[in-house]
Amino acid sequence: MDPNILLTAAPLALEVSGASYPINADHRTGIRVLQAAEDPTIDDEQARALEILVLYYASKGRIPDGVLQNGSEAIEQALLFLNFNEPKRPDRPGLRSPRSALRDFDWDWDAQRIIADFWREYRLDLTDPALTMHWWRFWALFRGLSDTSSTMRAISLRGTSLDDLKGEERKRLKRAQEAIVLPGRTEEEVMALTTFFWS
Image (cartoon, rainbow, N blue to C red):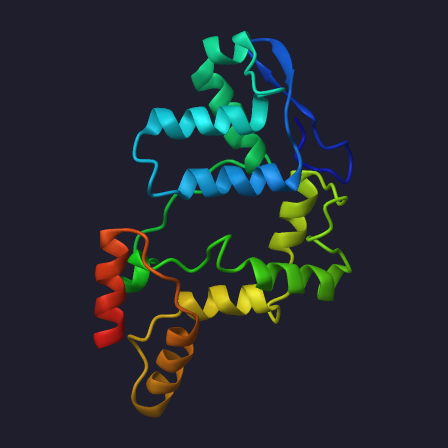
């Protein structure tokens, strides 16, 4: 597949072991896949993989046999599709702040920001049940939200480290972060929140 949707149509099927399988390529499926991938209540990797296979490949509640028989490859293709077939960027050491245990985005908590930003910037009503959009189009638009959008401002604010700030500037940023901090979902996140609020 070519990830440049300016030149080719966005894919509606994925190839697994030489066979082509239609997928659920709409933006809502992509969001559900990201939620499943980040869900701390799914602690079994096989259960997570099965959830992703169901979301992408299932038709009328059934995953094709060829997909099940080649589950690892099917998952790999699905995750490549999810990421525009872009290669995974290597982690760069030293870039994560001590706040790294705190999330800077959540599809549920930030849904209202996304809805408002898509309307404000693109005149797309994401709440319209009739709206169908290919995942690649949605993801390009999401990633293209302006730096002044509510969504991107919240992500940036949550991810900004207080370490190099002092005095009134530090207090102002901390108050702003406290106003939009995401709730803890795991024990690690709850501990990080406790440290954040009491530091």
